[in-house]
Length: 358
Image (tube, rainbow, N blue to C red; front, side, top):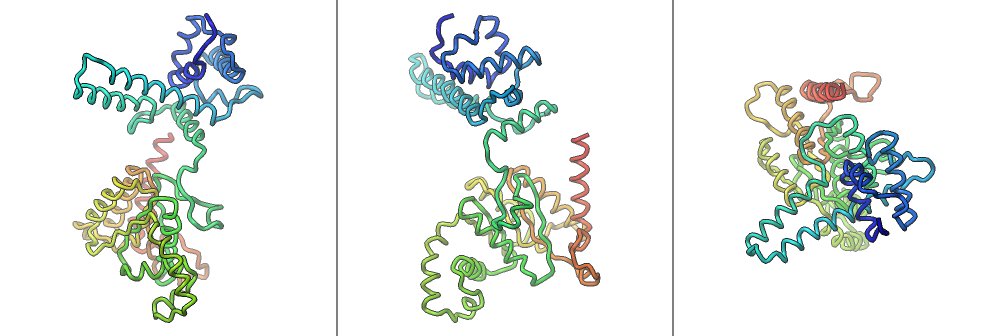
């Protein structure tokens, strides 16, 4: 076999379709045919993996002796092959004389759909091997699987993970709305965020964000006792305010299903990275005579929605007076008002996870 002219596309094809390595070996593809040293090293690792495990999987490429291939390099090779593959098929469709314009359009759409071969499917059954491969693909992206909270100290412990539902509970007037709104606005500088407002007026939201951005005390803005220098600080931040990737769903209708539809409509346009709901028990899911059952239903539905949209939903909730009756004021799950429903939803989701794990 002569020297290889397109080394990376060949390696990319083997990374995307690892079952083709056996055919490549049978057709005489040898390590020495690769001129580039890194490409030759990668192909040698593929051969070593195949000889040892009888199958080629990308996850094994990162455990081969001291000559590990960078994750970014593997991703680049894979992407290069994918782009070449798709570009060639689209170009072949465009230059085909036997197909009319409408036929070419349909064929190109079909090719673009075929790109799904390189991506994750929405619904599939995964073995442990499949889970590991998916994990490696996620690691290759070198990105946090979600977004930060906006508070550096809090970021040491948690982040807003995709497909998750997070509940923040506090007693009335303890600052949960301020926290939720600040998390929304801070993240909206670099991410698409929605704030579902059921408690405040839009003017109150504007006041709070401007106070946080400018450093002008909120009470001064509310009582219109702003000094000239403070007005200048606010003016300097107005342009930044306008550029925030923040959508406010102002809910005069507290019907739970109406709110869900509103969230979905915005997500279709903006691909939301974070949704903050203020707050849980102000929403109403009609048809429930028991508040605990209603809250359980809404919590379960919000968890399902977070997975459906592959985003994080943060829902604010009030704590009951029980926390004030104890010497230890640290809240527990049962302190959440109407928490029976939340607790049941949490238990059900935990049990589902255990069943999947088992």
